[in-house]
Length: 194
Image (cartoon, rainbow, N blue to C red; front, top):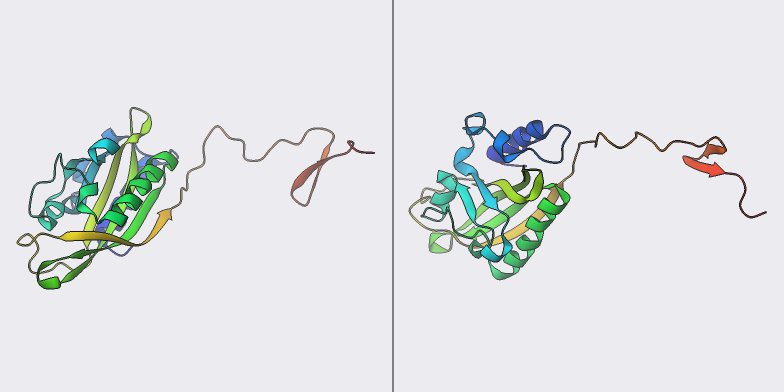
């Protein structure tokens, strides 16, 4: 993670979730992430509506020179990246893992702008397939930010952010029954074929 906003939001999200797959939407306190709110957004998980913005920070809106609340997230992306992003958002919510990616976009006068995208699942009433929180932050803030609209967002390198929680209801290791013995990390039971 290269951008301050990405690291800050991920650390906050990770602390809020604790030993759960994802924190509840209601546990996210805007004042706790006030330094990164401008780069933060929340998406509704609604594939037919192209995953609309429920909330978009001021710097995210400035990237596109308009208020994004209610607009679809996917139409901001080029065709190939749009399809990949649709699948990535589904993976983030289904597998309850985070994802960070490099993004490239076209600015004015053929300028290219590099950004960083973070997507993290949120739990809402116990379900992780309804909300996604994330950041979209430029790695270098251009002088024209807010005056010229970005276009042609394309995904670059990406990686999943693995989970570090341990479900409470699983035993630390499989129990060994009285007739079994451990050999090379496996439980061996005598018998069977003679």
